Amino acid sequence: MSVPAELLEHRIAPNRLPDTEWLNTWLARADRREPILLGLGERWEGIPGPLAAALATVPASAHGYQLSMYGLPRLRAVLRDYIRDTHHLAGHEDRFEVAVSWTGTRSVMLDFAGLVAARQAGRPALALAVAPSWDYAGVVEPAGFTMAYLDPAEPGGWLPDAATVAAWEPPADRHLGLVVINAQHNPTGLDLGAGTVQAMIALAVRHGAAVLIDDAYYGFADPADEPASALHHLLEDPRADGLTWLAVRSLGKQFNCNGWALGAVTASPALLDELVNGVRANHTYNHGGHLQSAMASWLADRAAVEAYLADERRAYAARRQVAVRALAAAGVSDVVAGPAGPYLLFPVPAGFSRHDYLRRAAVGTGVLMSDAWPATRPLDPHTGRHIRMYLGREPAQLAEAVDRLARAGLLPAGD
Image 1 (spheres, helix red, strand yellow):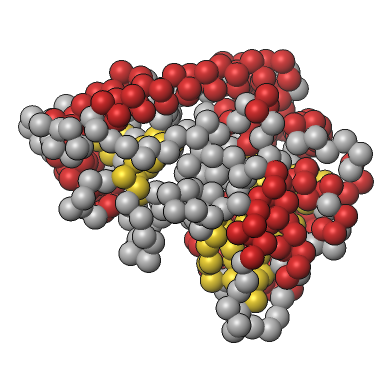
Image 2: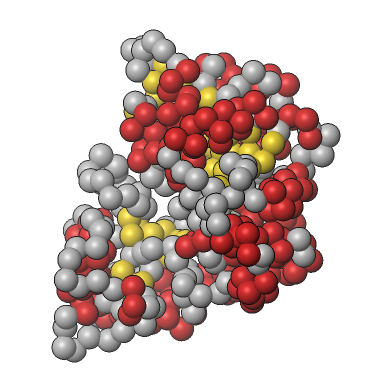
């Protein structure tokens, strides 16, 4: 089963995601096969062996509260070097500082949005991201922001170019308060490129907006492809010196340990001190020292880390190829499967809404996928016909998922 049985809850509704209801409906069928979970970006396996083994050697102090709100000092030091080196920040050491988040990166984004909103005044503020996007609305709307989106420069395209970004202006009754840069774009897996990233930074400078950099999949991209680092470009741009900015990078996504909720938090030294010792101290103590200690030991072996990530990239490339070919054989065109992410997008056939298609696939075939706009909130405001397929399963499972959809008449060349 692609979802471990011990994680399932039947007596109560465990969350508000429709996937849960659909999964339980499928599991209740007497004729069911094993479900194939391709919605949630989670494998529940694949954690590096040395990282898991390091848990057995943590010091006794790791099991108590930690003293520093910047994170376990040993991890913070290793992580700072890792961020500096992988984002090419040499020469800017005095302009940034790094902390550890032990509550994931989402909660840090929410804290940052609240801090930015408290600093800004005037007309209602917009937060701008590239469409389609991860659930940034869920972390900025509680702070009072309203989402706005950059759409592709050309019909049929997926990412805005630098000219489209430069030409964007907020409505007359709004001001731009926050620019979200997700350079390794979720869900397309495409890299925004240096030009678009630089244009988004320039847009923030022009409007005096804060910048939130979400590097959730930066470690997923092949360094040989020279992925755009928004953090690098921001620190290289002298016009950005006065900006309020924050960068987060998930370690859970890199190392298949999302449940550890560890991530890197990078900002200017003054801003980071206010965030970790002011805002975050209001709602969390520094806990999870055993996880932080193990992560420090793992990250210190840079050669092993890079070898692991290279293996992950090769595995995803193979899975991506299998899924794309299977969809093409089933008559599906306009598949988007960039190399800098663990997903692909494909359009639902005519006659289906995205929601209805996802429901039919789940309860009729046991293949659970998600919308291109994954969120718990209603999807009606968002247009488009594409849905998202997670590629973290074995190639045979991905091929079987496409075959099930085709046999159920849910793909153009289906039975």
